[in-house]
Image (cartoon, rainbow, N blue to C red; front, top):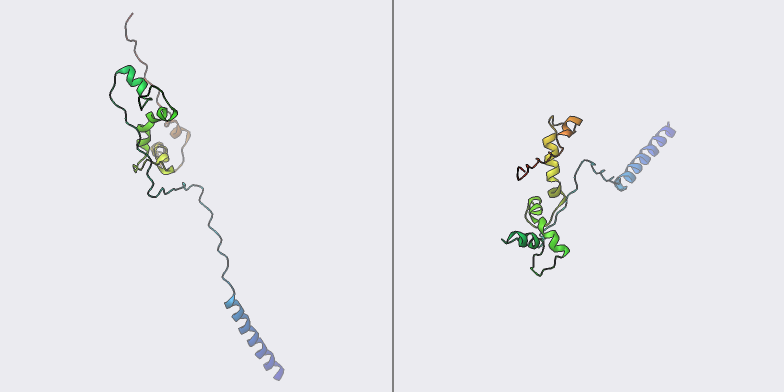
Length: 147
C-alpha cells in the first residue's frame, strides 16, 4: 500500500511538471494563408501623381494630323509625342485621376465586359455567353460617289 501511495505521488508530481513544461513552450508556428488564385492583385500608389498629359489644339486638317503627334511644334515627332495621342484612352481608364494606372483601373473594362456577358451570374462563361463578347464588325462604308 505504501508503494501504491508513493507511485501515485510520483505520478502527480510528474504530471504537474509536464504541464509546467507545456505552459512555458512557445506557441505553435503560424502557417501563412495561401493566396486565393481568384483574387486580383492590389496596389496603393499612395499620394503619387503622374505628369499631366498634353492637350491637342485646334488646327487645319493636315496640321492637325501632323501635330496630333508633334506636341511641341518643333516639326519632329518623338516617341513620347507619338504616345501622347493615347491620353483620352488613358484618362478613361484612370478612374481616380492621379495619372497612375493601377491594375484594378486597367482591369475594370474587362471585368465589366465579363459581368455583362455572364448572363446567369455563375462566374463562368459558356460558349454562348463568350460569343457575346466578340467585337461587332465595323459597318461597311458606302461609296462617296455613284460612278
